[in-house]
Image (cartoon, rainbow, N blue to C red):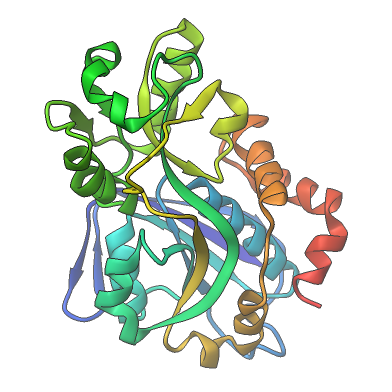
Length: 305
């Protein structure tokens, strides 16, 4: 079986109802296991198009996990990295089949409101997701309501992630004005760049403030703490949902049922993320995921039983 992964730059634009123009695209193929596309029960004769949000590690981890599981069951899977907005447009237009990283009811609510009539919410697989603003563990503040008076200690900057993400939207539209942080610069970046800045600052014993979220392996890797959010502007804990195109259930009924029943507690998710993104320094995740599956075989077998 051929499993393909396409890494897309942020320049993805929708033309008409369903056509995607891909800008700055690079592709790579992984191991060929030699199976025919589709499964005998699923009956599909094409690859499952699985969208992955750039930089969202919990979604990347879950996607690679399901890629391995589905490959073992005889399906072809194509992973495509893209930014958040084009993913929902692509799902609604039929260019993607599935994304495993929709945060509800807050972070991605706007996209579900815009495209929801053409999407299929398969339910939450983790109920402990939370948006955060984090600082180095020894930072001299503990709450967002202390930040405005101490902004100079953080170089008057909040290091953010990908523009267009729900976290950046909420930080810019809610947190910044709500806590009087308009004089600070919210830096649009990428998750890898933000993590590099976080590592550099904590290694050097310097103050830093970043947009982050739970679950994320950075909390295990770097000495960080969340700033309290007394106004609740970042919202309560959310669920991480699987969202599919409206035709996914008809095209892949067996996989639709498996994903609908998918649950992954945070401790298992942390261990998979840690293995992929912290203990391993590379981007060929296949062997790492296969080893994690072998170490957690009973859980993985239960996902398709």
